Amino acid sequence: MAESWSPTELLAAGWSEADLAWEQAAEAVAEALAANDVALAKQEAGNALQMARENFDAIDPRLGTSLANYALCLAAAGGEGVAPLLGEAREIWRGTGRWIARMDAPRMARSSLFHMRMEARHRATYRARWQERWDEMAAEAKHRLEAATASPAVSGEAAATALARWRRERPAMLNDTRKLMATVYLLLASPAPDGDRR
Image (cartoon, rainbow, N blue to C red):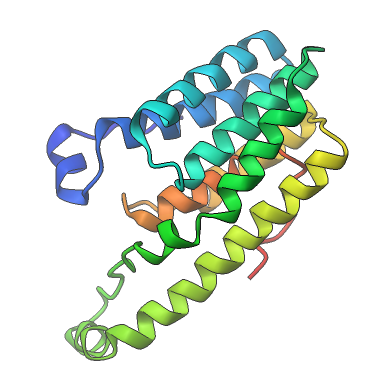
């Protein structure tokens, strides 16, 4: 179910090939765990972590999610070194506020010229509402990471739930909100909530 985007579409959306490759790798981790293939999940989680370390800022939530998912895959495989990775993931997520503050609110109004004008005229209010939503998503991720620190485990069922939520709710457009949603929804720290915590 991987989407494909041309280099021109990525460039127009302000995305890099690394942005898309990371999203696909994070999705592959969830797919592997949903299929109870822990070895493949660990490999894909390692790939996602390497991409995040090489391409993203130290305050980027994709790095935090990559660290957490790799730690959880290590735990599922019976490996060691889980606690330090989860601790690093939590620290990164604590510092993501600056990354989130740089996000662009997506331009959504397409139904009429009236709606487009209203969105343009009230851009600050529109962005403030998105900021609230982004902050709620980040709070969800932080909460789930805290729970994972106490009990670092992930199941195939939890991964399948996270993957289904991601595929159901991800934006069709490439934008900053989609980047953040991927980090929260594909974070396998604990079962994803049944509904969106808005």
